[in-house]
Image (cartoon, rainbow, N blue to C red; front, side, top):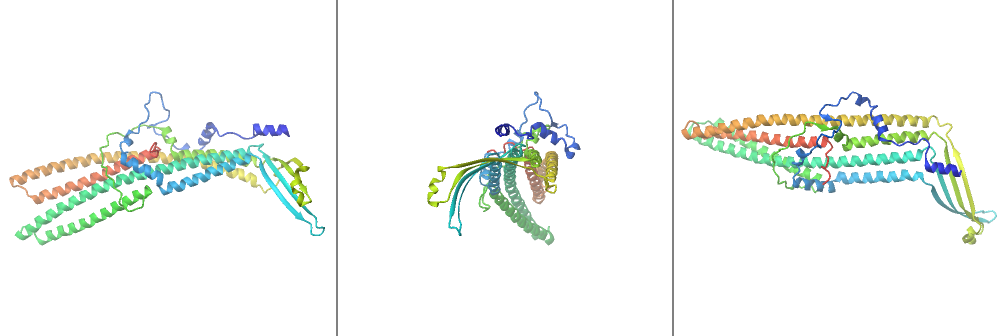
Length: 460
């Protein structure tokens, strides 16, 4: 028995560690992965001559004001606070799973009376029981729980990164909203100027009532649209306040402006950056957990050996219970149990765990595929926005030259202020479109950053 105990303490028959090589082998069994060919833009092997991957193109978006908002959100966001409690529960469950590796000790005390004879007896015992983890069942259960904990930890990190990303998007949406509100107000002022000119022209007979009615209708609709934008901006501020854990009054102030984006987006990406994404790491630990769960299920089909010990005494005289241990009794024993017939439940459980492992492997592959899609979509959108911005700037430059020519024509009497105001209104429209492009450009950079794993975004 002593030799068996020593053997159990030093090793577990059938227990194996989920080494990186074994997990990689499991990943390679994915049917989803088999059909995915990685693009050349992904650097699969980081060579010595390759420079470190830079996030400078994202860092220039992180203003001190935004960093302060992200820090506040990570500390006070409701979803993060709730998720931390869930993570704490997973950690406690991990500790519970590990306790199965150690003996359990219980104290027993009872007394009984014989109503016929009038005799009574009191008992006091300490009982210990220990299931020898001969096949590694309990160790596998513990390691499965540990893997679940690390998976939950990365899920928590992913949530924090998502909240930080949403705060960054809401922040720039607020800035864009302020710009749009200013431009619409400017457009309304130009429209009012046109209205005054048409009013004068109507009085002198060079404009009709229909022209005046049309411009009045347009002015009313623009005022309604401005109110809609103001309300949208207020709701946007409320969203930012909610993300930061504030009361949603819609009063938060964002003072920054759109600064020029000078850093170019990289054309090549190291694949190991993507593999370290929080959600992908969480799925990897799910594979690791399933590896141990299969071991646990297989070990449950084998015989179990228990060692038990009891120390205590009994006394028929209750008044002498303090002398129970004057003549103590010690019992030590062992037992073996093995499943014989259970309707195939244990065998089916192994099959279920094996299927769950295959599901975890495919879920991992799907997460990688989704991550690749998010990166490609963000890159495609950024490329399209850059091209649109070039065309937009050409249109604005052309319209600005046209306005300058119109001003010169006014000076020589070949044009009028009405025409000038119409062209100035068109310029304001173009500038509003540019604001949308600048917002989309920043949103897509944030999307790309999130798709690559948001390294550092949630670490303020």
